[in-house]
Length: 339
Image: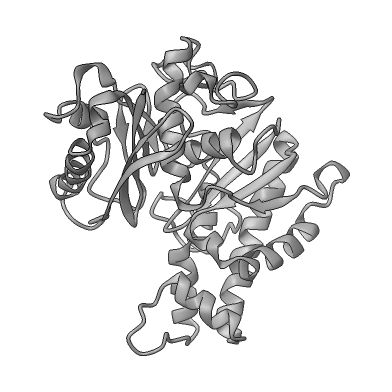
């Protein structure tokens, strides 16, 4: 049996998995992301996840290892600079993973942005299967995205194409850690939803953390401040999706990540606001659907990216870097390239 390793590194959690040729998880490990800690503490969490995976019997069949990380990333350099992880700026994550004592020399870790990995997963096994042009978004601690264009994963020169979280939708909006103002992430991420609700006077129940999930629960009970937080987030997302649709003529939008678990609390106002922002004929009526692979999409996508180099040398989205030719209308989509 061929086994692919996967790491998914985000602002809230660091997850790892061993994945078989059909995209099924054989083993899983997860630790909280010490996002405000020094770089080596963060790397220690990654090492701990790798150690747990290496203890699984399937590790001996490891063929390749894919790494999905919050971005920006640099695929060619193998470095990451996640906006929500300040200690990692140009951090050589690929080299550090490669040097782990249990990672075999043939594993050749491959790096991709976490939302691009989610996009690969949803186009292979999930809600975007068979779609020629799609935007897939992760709405969580931060916001990322990936694009399927002409049936292929489009990652761009460095692996960051589709990074919709840092499109500005409010020229006078709040400052973003990326350096710009009015970014979608600063208005619609889980962090932003909770911060807005708190600033407007909402308070979670005693003993409950002030998170987007707690705001969701309050919104479902009709709390006006919580509902307003989701209205604001939905407008920002709708503006960015409408702009992207106008640019590349999308057939579908898929939204995953922790905030997407809010269901209609997010999707109902999002669809309503999109009808206002998508004013041109060719931008109207684009379906917005929840991701099918839920919170494991990043891991499945990282495994897909790891597996794809075995199928051919073309490079991800036309890139020359040692990354997958994710022509997902072909063998990768039906699993042949993964087995």
